[in-house]
Image 1 (cartoon, rainbow, N blue to C red):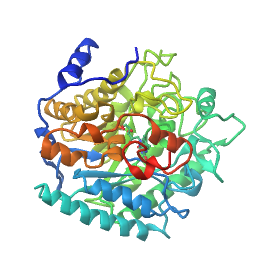
Image 2: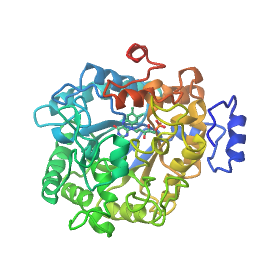
Image 3: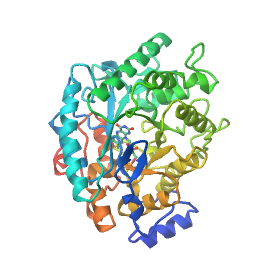
Image 4: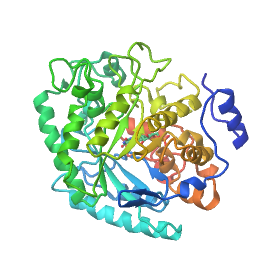
Length: 448
Ligand SMILES: Cc1cc2nc3c(=O)[nH]c(=O)nc-3n(C[C@H](O)[C@H](O)[C@H](O)COP(=O)(O)O)c2cc1C
């Protein structure tokens, strides 16, 4: 049952984890987070990453604005070894908001300019923190699929029809469309082109986003997309679109990283969710089945993908799965389970996958912000137990972008600066506003 966060000490949260019979490991220190990670010829300076967090503050041509730059400068001053740039649309009609970032042949130099500023700043920060290597920058490329907007109005571009997802979005079957195979074929080529453009813009790698119910994620669960080469019962067909993009990028880039943020468990009853038990027909209990996600990771690894950013859930349908919280967005519901259960699920999904795949494959896990000041101890515990390689933080980074520095210098995240999972950032996002922390960042407190 739901209970808000009231743990006054590490011992108190340790006890609750035991009482709930969860397996979140809590280290007594955060030393593991300081270790560099060697990967190919790249050295990631430490084990902390900023997860992609849409800010909805791009210029209308899709380029980053001053406000976007402010956000990434704040991250760069924090000292994370990896900064994962937010969902950036590959096409106008795949934007989730008119102010979502979008990468184009006309604006990629603007991305290059801000990236260069952010790189220099992170170099200084990492130097001051005694990390000899430079931060790695990945750009997340996305098509919003069902969550696309056209002329600032919802215009779902679906892989298949699903009334429940339409209902959660406040749309009906009549609005938007189901994307055709021909349109998907065109999008594969666009995606490949935009990934190569990300390289031109100076990124170290690109994420072909496949999570949270957006286009590729929805294709992975498109059992009900019939008469299509991209849908049906076989995983081979449901993953064809993602594989074709990755194949199109193979061998073109040597050191350029091709990665994916992969939703390994949607928490949507079969026959719609990816990574769910086939006989599951209700949201709770959520029953995970990682057979297909593991098969997909191995296939993508054979195609050259060596880093996987593991996530779960669909924030438009079951937000507690993706980002465990205490307070819902306005009009939302309190979580149907104890948030520590949700944290345990999402973090252990990564561990369960890691134990079944090759040692060399690097994983990044997410869902730490609910743990507030104690997050560093769980992150360290997971690395010590080899349940993940890198720990990625989302909402914490908006609230308290210097959390890595706090961990490295004082061994704990500053409680008074920590995210409190109030869902205001998600609420800004839901209402199409510029997104930030309404509690800790004075600029966004004013916008609330
Ligand atoms: C305001 C907001 C924006 C987000 N934007 C993205 C995004 O652009 N891409 C993505 O993959 N996930 C996005 N997420 C999900 C986060 O990256 C992360 O997975 C989630 O917040 C859980 O991590 P946390 O507990 O550290 O916040 C977003 C989440 C929020 C709250």
